[in-house]
Amino acid sequence: MKKIVNNVTIECVSGDIAAQKDIAAVVNAANAQLRIGGGVAGALHRAAGPGLEEECRPLAPIKPGEAVITGAHNLPNDYVIHCLGPVYGADRPEDKLLADCYRNALQLAEDSKVDSVAFPSISTGAFGYPMEDAAEVAFQTVKEITADLKQVRLIRFVLFGEDALEVHRRKMEEVLG
Ligand code: ADP
Image (cartoon, rainbow, N blue to C red; front, side, top):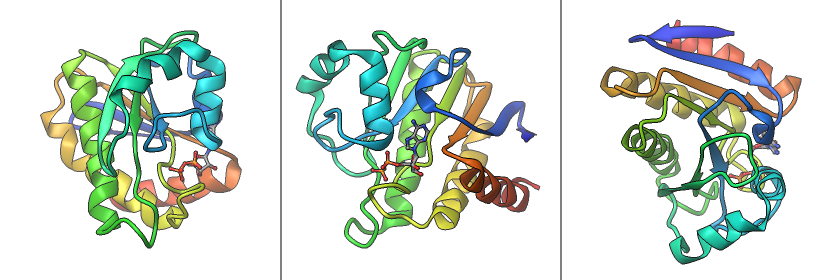
């Protein structure tokens, strides 16, 4: 499913964030220490190889809502943008902190002249953010930012499984029309 807003294509697919061959920058749902961990961070670090953790070490720790950019090592991309999402019920206000992740990630992509970015559903795994609410924040934030983007022309949401894809499809229709 695809929408075009201010000349930026926004799409949802189901798949693995570590296997997005046609995308310049993939976003990591990172932990504060930028270590391998589980979920998205596990998948990306395993595919990238140990060089990614090494490059991340001097950049850590990061705070909720922050983003940092590194090379992609053995991943089929140019960059990894690491975002620390809010832990639901602990880092507040969670909607603002989650919006900051999307905003800061896209700003780093712009600064590095990246034309395509793939996001996972940040904070909806180990960090417990209800997916429907997180999807609303994600699409609203992306929608607001599209007008300011000069480099990024494709934003892909890579969802883990058909249920996650369905939630995002519905929310995307609601928010982007
Ligand atoms: P967080 O700690 O920010 O909650 P997680 O990595 O635990 O991050 O999960 C974020 C979301 O990404 C969850 O919805 C999870 O199901 C999904 N996910 C897990 N592995 C992958 C993957 N390889 N590709 C895309 N999405 C994934």
